[in-house]
Image (cartoon, rainbow over all chains, first blue to last red; front, side):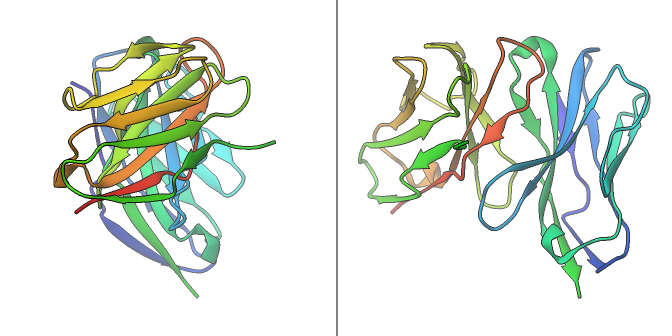
Length: 115
Length: 115
């Protein structure tokens, strides 16, 4: 079975600081993708960043970057220059290429950015 | 363009009643997904449509849950004889493409409360 684990239920960071959210996953598949989604109180799930497992280079998207360690099955999210609007639940998710694209989510990390 | 829309935004019903939740995907998206998110948890996969057919319904918890997508666009999730344990946010997502890796765009969800 495939699993995604986020071991940090809550985190906080000062505005303009950097924070890293952790995620580990387990799968025996070779073809998969990893995502970080953000869910603010509005409930809308918003894609933050994605990583193809076959790519060694870590994905970056403006202030967001990942540290993808395939052998360790680790996929952490770094948010630089944190902004108040980054306050939200963050979910790590695994997508298996040969299973139609359904996402397997972790339990989430609630991030608070403090002024 | 318009994103994924879901109606109603909130639904309160009594135990034993029947409910229908509607999802209107992004125009042209062939794949549609339903997820259920319980309080404090990550979303869990329910069912995936490719066009009009359910390609994977392995996440439906029991036969009280059923979903349709008769014309390959709008989908309806139907729950019979609702139970208090069905209370959750039901999320819908759509993506383009026929398989593998395509970004899923989520709707704002329907919060179902069963009294």
